[in-house]
Image (cartoon, rainbow, N blue to C red; front, side):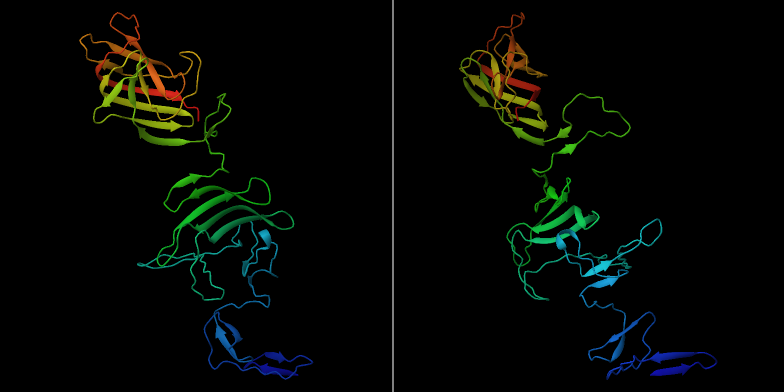
Length: 354
């Protein structure tokens, strides 16, 4: 059966029923609705109403510019909302833009949230260590999509009312089916290079050629801190009574240690070459004096009436100390230390064993 509606001046519109129509009825809304709205079933089947909302397909997914639901995402991820576009240089790109026009208040939000409840609308505490959300980047291998990189969020600590510590991980794909966590921002804000990350690569320097002969250009460690140096003798160590302010500072880049030392105090019962021990890192062990690159500025001075100075570090014979050659005014180099007040100011550079 066909219902033909004629125009006021010309033309017509036909509404046709199928050959086997069944016992169907359609009730139109009482108003005209607004521009760009859709008609949909209301709470009662067959009763239509205007709406600006899109509805789920029969598969449970909401599609835009897609003929059917994709089920070949990474690890069979099932998307309930899919947008597909046609690339190129034009504007037919698949994407979502959210713009909030406001003079005050919060900006536009993109929220990934989780509740541990079993049903929709539940409010159930999320436990420590739970995976909260992920931004997953995927590319097609000809059959399915493979994850190339991901930014993940986890809870990171005891959770409770108004308490929800969290951390972020950044993962990349080294050339396989899965991504690996490389960098983490911890709950306390610390930026951590994870064990699966080789480090920070400084091999590329824009506008300049790399003519070095080094075998590795990766910064494995950077650390700053302070330590307490101890002055002693090489023969009889003696007793060190440091004054206030006695200390040292260091910067470790890779395996190179840059240290500054300030030792002030009284040394009793010491003999032999003057030494500074308790350096922040064990140095590379060398058999002979002078084999380990190290440098000193400043001097070790004591006040015993002779005005002798000790200058220049020679070696790190076994672990965390450095000893100085002794100059007693006639450059004889006698390895001797005199009890009394001592004052050492120097800077060191050495290669750490770790």
